[in-house]
Image 1 (tube, rainbow, N blue to C red):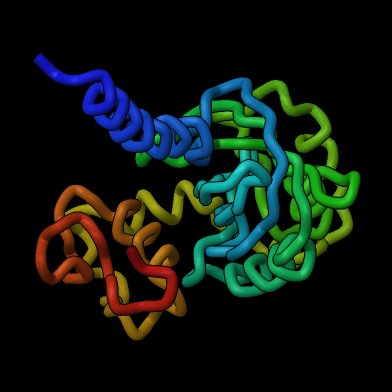
Image 2 (cartoon, rainbow, N blue to C red; image 1 turned 180 degrees about the vertical axis):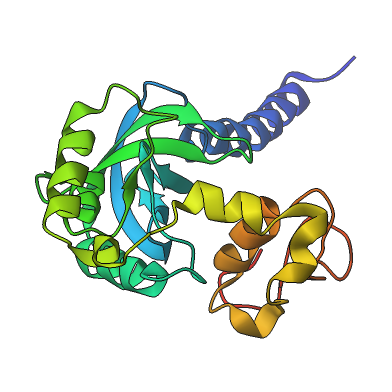
Length: 225
């Protein structure tokens, strides 16, 4: 039978052991996002015209794709211009995000409010992104801004027959990929950018970006896992 002093020592040891674990559980940042959730944070990286890395105010980083917006791919006309514009508008700035859905690869699909304005609307207004009607058929403001941009020949609408990004992806993915320029990791500035391209061209890895077959492309690039 343990003495009273020994029991007290054991109780103290157990208490000290349990407290850090309990504290860690309470203080660990929430990194998951649920549809309908609204949160604040800061844009830490702009992958392309419609994909962003956000550091949440409560801690943790999430990848967000703009809801109802599809920017030109990097290899398309105005793809680079869309990415640069998105960086000017959002990089390093505080945002308010409203999650609409969770995408195929676990990314939050959300509307982003930057300095009181809707980021998707800003890009569409400049002719640097399309209204993605398939996923946001009721976004009437996006539809209106796209009509205005098209009528004014702004950005991508200055070209005679601009190809929607979703059509371009269909044309350049899958077994027929050999008809387009091959890519390697040197074609991308960051790992998230390469990862996005890699995921859009699945199944398989037609460009050989995932050398060790672990599902992560170009892991040596900045921003990698």
